Image (cartoon, rainbow, N blue to C red; front, side, top):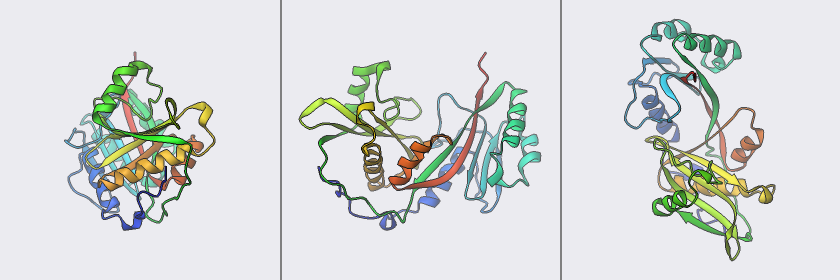
Length: 268
């Protein structure tokens, strides 16, 4: 299984990743006008093509990208949000002092910060890796095969990062690695979900006994190349404290690009 099947480097990709990312963020935060170098605060509204997650509320959302802030807030707190952030320094938005203050305000309305996440986009200077033959068979899964996988495993899906089976983030493709000649011995899987109009998110899972051999990097890079080849922008998200996951992303040709803060209703 050779791995130089896509020869072009990121620099040769005929798409403006930055422009597509910004278009996505405008949809995500109901921002009609791009203001480079600005702080864009708008009233919350779910727009077609925006990224949505079933457990996350549009009551408040902030996306910090290259020194710009895309923020949307419910009408009940938008005046407070503008007072707090219209002159802020976006790059310091995730200081705990600010997050604590924001969380307390959200609590007044029955919401709380759900999470903060670091997200990564493809590095245009990255040179595609060349791999030697690996002792695995590779299978691409698409709509029908993914549905069959879901029916087979249901709630016991062992690869729940690669295939999320979400109503708001439909799975589009997966790459499955198995032992040579033994389709039942699964080593790992990468998958990609259509999170928004422009941005598709990659997820990976490697079985414990196969970890430490570079499979996570291989699976991530192959999925990244596949998504780029169909003119969609792949992205990779992880927790700020998950250094091993960040290392996988960087080795696969991703660089940190933006941070996101989102909220959900407080659970009773």
